[in-house]
Amino acid sequence: MSYKFIILILSLSAYLVANSTNQITWNGDTNQYDLSYIDSLKKYSLKKYPKKYKKMEKTLIIKAKIESAECRHLKSYDWNQYIDVTRSGSCYKTSRRNVKITDFNFIKDTEKISIFTNYLISKKYNLVKDKFEKTATFQKRLQLVKDNLEEITNTYMTISYNKVYGKPIIKPIDYDADNELFYGILKSEHGSISEKIVINIPLLSAEHFYNAHKETNVIYQYKNGKVYLKNIIVSSNGKEYSAIIRNTTYKPKDIKVALYKQVKYGEKLIKKLQNDIPKFLKKSKAKKIDNSKWLFIVGIENYEYTDSVKYSAKSAKEFKIVMKKRLGIPEKNIRTLIDRGATSSKIDYRLKDMLRRVKQGDTIYFYYSGHGIPVPSQNNTPYLLAQDMNPAYLNDERFKLQTIYKSLSKSKASKVIAFIDSCFSGGTDNQALIKGVAATRIKPKKTTFDKSKMVIISAGSGTQYSNKYDEKSNRLFTYYVMRGLIKNNTNTQRLYDYVKSNVQEKSYEMGLSYEQVPVYTGNIKLKL
Image 1 (cartoon, helix red, strand yellow):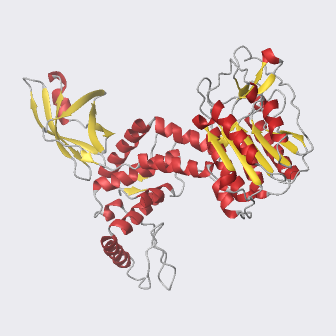
Image 2 (cartoon, rainbow, N blue to C red):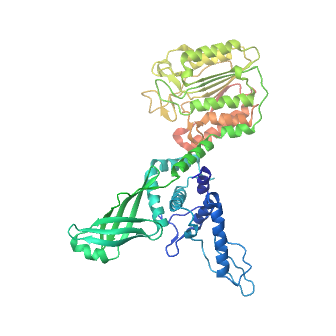
Image 3 (tube, rainbow, N blue to C red):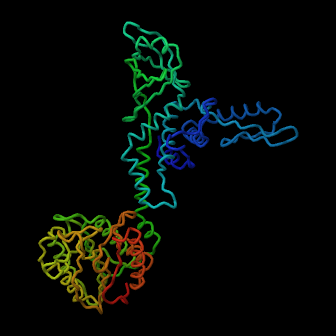
């Protein structure tokens, strides 16, 4: 089944499932289905069997004219509802006549089952994100389907089989009294099912069972692209019996169920929704390259000795792309250190090397996303945590926040703007990082630097934690910094106001313990 058809199925009009019984509108007397399913058959036919479909449509129109012979002006067939013959002289509107599934006899039964199964699943679980639905809610629903793929597929496959083939019927052939075995044939009301079966029936019940009406329920199992007849339950006189297939050459039918593709489609949709920075950036104007601008980026998601910081690496990489385009920073002036590329020795060397190259009048942009650690034994002195550093043993002077800020502000640059996606409260994502401080949050010691030429915009204040933003697959603070830079690439004060407002509001939505209010220190009047 093609990818486009999967999208087609997913985009069908809403279908209501009655209560929890997974039933669909169905008229057993006329073998008619819900109209939107008929519409999906029509679209599938036009794609795969265009000539046969047009021939069928022509036949139906002729048939409709014969049924309303006095209405010769009839020119079209309304697929979605009924033949509409308007009043004209003695001609009146006819009664409804829905298209029957049997009209699509050129489509294989297995194809109908596949279409119907996907149709039911997509409508029940709605694997398309609603306009007014949060991505996180959609992602949760998609995960539910992923976790229960086999069970969901089997449930709707059985419904589809029974609808396409109709009511299963047991026709008696013989009864072996010596072995107490009933022999019969399992047939379908319509379709091509015809399998020899055998049921163990006690002699005392045999005659009644042989002649009485029998309710039959066939359960199918979908596995590895094939449908197996899992169980046949036959009910008679208040008792249930299990039948088995006698045919040793029985082979499962090949059925293509697109649920797996639907899930992948949903995952791609989520990824697209989450990764909207490229979409916004694409619409923005690129600034002219300015060789006096420098950018130093550190993004550490996976640490050697402590917990990871989800999305830090991704946020750092995207931040570089945004800064490069919106502020005109040349590639040769950018230093990007991600994960294992951000060890203590590499950060120290690359930063010192860059600062040596900075000239009088240049601008430095500094970005850090990772753990920020206040060390209790050092009066809560804050440290940046390199990828290979252990938060339990911090004494490397080079990574004191004070040391890094001073080295930046004492450089030849006339302007330094830093973005710190770390709160230095001893944790991140509402999880404590330092052992023994799970119940509290540490307030880090203040740092000093030249506030006339430098401004630092940080993810949060005081004892707050920095948060991840699952809906956008980014760090919350960094996401809105990037959005802000795309909207405004000249005014630092306006950028800060935008970031603070959005981060604060979004963190409140997450819950009281997730409160995050970005702060700045230094000269906020500096131009970007």
